Amino acid sequence: MSQENTREIRKTTIGGQALIEGLMMIGPDKKAMAVRNAEGEIILEFLTGGKISKAEKIPFIRGPVRVFKQLVTGTKALMRSAEIAESGESTEADNADSTKSTTTEISESRETSEQSRRKKSFSEKYPNFSLYVSAIVSIFFSVLLFMLLPGLIVDGIKLLFKIDLSSRLVSLALTLFEGIIRVGIFIFYLWLVSKMDDIKRVWQYHGSEHKTIACYEARMPLTVENIRGFSRFHPRCGTSFMFLIMIVSIIILSFIGWHSRLINLIVRLLLLPVIAGITYEIIRLVGRYDNVLTRAISKPGMAMQKLTTAEPDDSMIEVAIAAMEAVIPEQEGSDDW
Image (cartoon, rainbow, N blue to C red; front, side):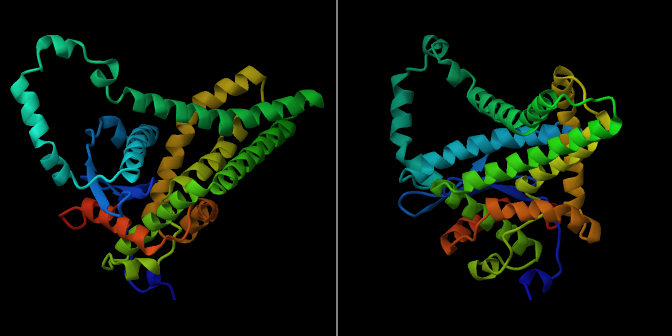
């Protein structure tokens, strides 16, 4: 019997993201990343979190907003983890001590004049600009590959075989065929990426994230021995979210029908936030409740996690524990769904 079935299960809002040689965990109050550096030390850093906007509290609107913010935060953490993993950086306290003399010298030299401040580069004035650009480019690539390309393929087939769209049944068949192509591209993309050696370690950290959260939800102490026995598959996962988006898009687009190439592209772009919003609410329900329906909804996405997670070693679980413990709220239950 698995350890998940031996304890009362809770549902937490804490989630994470695999990084380069580490993990980021996001709790209700804090965001933290733990990364193992080149010397084998676990470096823990807290990430600044912006204020929760009103849009993030409105059902069906909060989904796209939170996904974009998560993408920006995740990109920032990923870039930082690469720096730590390739260096021999120590803890933040050690870094602060090592820079004391430099800070004093800068202060004493009085080089921070008004003129030097005006000479700051664009990247210094807008430090998050590149992160937003990266997030937008990532979204554009995903939309192009998983949303627009399947439609263009089906539209090309329609023109090649001169398919008549006057029949509602034909239009529905084309939409379903587009959905099958979309899912096929997604699975092939995951399979292709999973063959990369560097990505395999990221997938292992992804697995350690799921196992650690599962251990926490089972109300068991966060130890390597306890976490090792939990499943690496979890219903609240980005992989499940992406797969579910494709299923929801098939259902919604089936009511829209098939039109000209330009109209199809415009409709899919305009409906993407709607599809993402609906999918986000479904994921929240799946994460909150455990019954026959939610298990059926989460099963295909969890099956996809066979490509995006792998069994971690004990050193990776140690990193996951460090990141998880840093974001657990002091007030018990404040992270419940």
